Amino acid sequence: MTDLGLLNDGRVKSEMLIYLLFDKYLHVTKPRNYREKTRKEYLLTVQKKSKTRKIIRREVGQQLRYLRRNIKIIHFLLDSYQTIPLKIKN
Image (cartoon, rainbow, N blue to C red; front, side, top):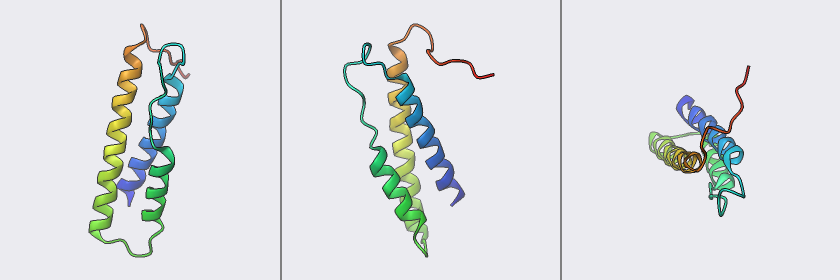
């Protein structure tokens, strides 16, 4: 379950980055990221009393695919900027 939790955390952080990088003046439409759907799927798996290997493996793969998609979106959004628009955290 540790892998699944880490993937979920990464997915949530990537969704935050998409939110921060999106600028309505530079980009035509905000990319879809299926935030509600992915959270529901994650919670359904985590809250099951008995989780088989098959269930865990399927959910890990699903979370990996969502995270991969979010990373592609982040790269796409960053391509429209001259420099990285995020502030340095001290």
